Amino acid sequence: MVAVGYTLMCEQTGPRELVDYAQRAERAGFDFEVISDHYYPWLDSQGHSPYAWSVLGAVAHTTSRVDLMSYVTCPIRRYHPAVVAQKAATVALMSDGRFTLGVGAGENLNEHVVGAWPHVQQRHDMFEEALQIMRSLLDGETVTYSGEYYDVPEAYLWDRPENGVPIAVAASGPSSSALAGEYADGLIAVEPDHRVVELFEEAGGEGKPRIGQVAICWGPDEAECRKRVHDQWRWSPLGWKVNAELPGPESFAHATQFVREEDLMQTVPCGPDVERHVEAFHKFVDAGFTHVALVQVGGESQPDFIDWAEHELIPRLRG
Image 1 (cartoon, rainbow, N blue to C red):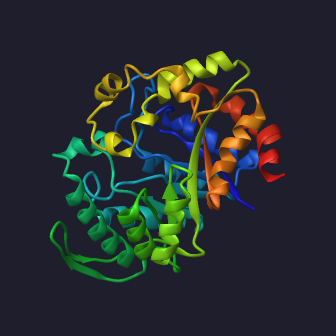
Image 2: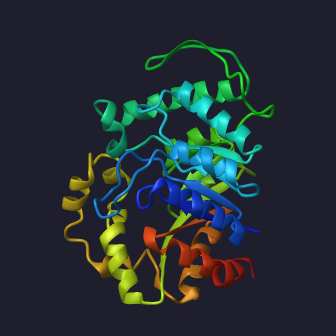
């Protein structure tokens, strides 16, 4: 059975509310929870961006059953990979082994706050070095590393789970899928692309978890849901090559000024019809994903969404 997840969206909700929603989602029956890790929201209208790792610590302490995952952290600019490994090990201990470190090559939107954003080939090379460092530290090794981009004179994680911390890697094409197959314990993807799953399996990922994410906007008024998606989610059709390069919310606002409500309806189901949301979820199931996390667009709608999901959506997804 495919695991049903809930997304803690830092870009649309403050930190205290995120912890509350995490507890509610666990009680509602979600199997796992993922959390975004941004410095900026994509659009001003989203209005938030707390530090995900502080939220994760609180969620790990106040939940007891759901698996947790960063979705995703970039370990190449804002965070040194040795520090990411330490954070991941700590959260894994606080959650009694329920945490998976989800990582990706990042976005200019968040990483430019500490310096210039590298070009795409350079940051992919940096990402591979980061994976080597984190993998070794989380496996319990004392690491001495001298690469083209990172130096680790000596590092060891004194507090880590005995069995290490699983790493999942975000991928969207051949090179990133190959990297995930070589270094990761799981695949992350935000498109229901069966080819990415195949590439991951061919590169060594056969039998490992594949974690997808699907945006929906449930609500009793479809027209209101459509407006909310256009207001807060119109950045999503730009695609990864654009999203990774834009530096801030103002840039995303300009880049999406001609996006229409009807353009978004092709990918984000809106309104009260449970079957639309089930269909969107099953696109990932059909593409070979083992875990699918739902994103409910709109921070203020989360309590009602979680209640509805408990009684209407989750039973249908498991039926």
